[in-house]
Length: 277
Ligand code: HPA
Image (tube, rainbow, N blue to C red; front, side, top):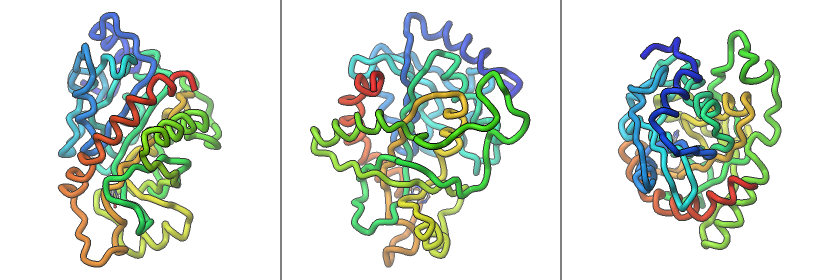
């Protein structure tokens, strides 16, 4: 499939495959977090390679399919795996899946990712709710002529991480006894992990955690008016902060999997509330 397919082409294709399903909420599952999509009931699963204009991620641990069905009684569409700009794709490749969700009738988005924490007290395997971000990678998928169909040229990023949806997640986390601190996410391009000097710089800038995804999707989603929250699975303390710690993608995937159960509990308890927040 070529990138010339529009989000409407992709949505039309998906509508035919989704049958009676009418999801209003979508979940993007990051590194190691994909298994949540296996919990979806009455599921239809469509490989990205079949969806017009979708790019197939080359990263291990990203299955690369859209799974639609019911999770905790709520109709959802899960993106099981995502593309990252460090894969060398045109930043525009990020626009297609997010705008396709919008064209499909999705109103709310839950983004997940794996991240490194700047707080020594963070447990590996714990969750952090994003309150804001720093687009440190300096890239933006919206660079280029504005497509007015999706949103205006200049748009605000204040409260990009929806305050009411965040309150819903925090209230459910408290009920379940799941720690869910908020933090500012720094987007690092990758594909390498950061240097210790970069981590010191990012801490000084006011970030709490770092990862290689999510922010481009947030930019595209806010441009087209999707309301969203994002949750990070803390897989490690950031580079240079813990003596002897060796960062690797294997470790990221292993620890993110451990977060999966906690994330599943939190999300299944929150989905209905997230739709009405
Ligand atoms: N840095 C960037 N991305 C990550 C990290 C990290 O420490 N951990 C998991 N994803």
